Amino acid sequence: MQRKVFWTAFGVLGLLADLALPFWWAMGATIPLAWLSWWIAYRSDWF
Image (cartoon, rainbow, N blue to C red; front, top):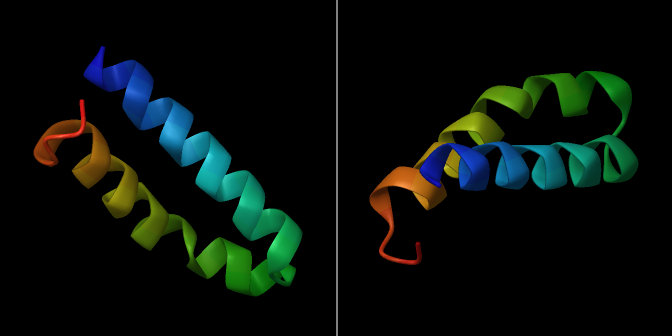
């Protein structure tokens, strides 16, 4: 379940970054988005 939440959050946040930011900014935002998705899936008490 947590893996599914991670990939869903990462996909949604990545898509939003791709649409809202220029290409290189979106590429640079990938690592912070991966960290945020990991935190949402594994560390927060949301899921």
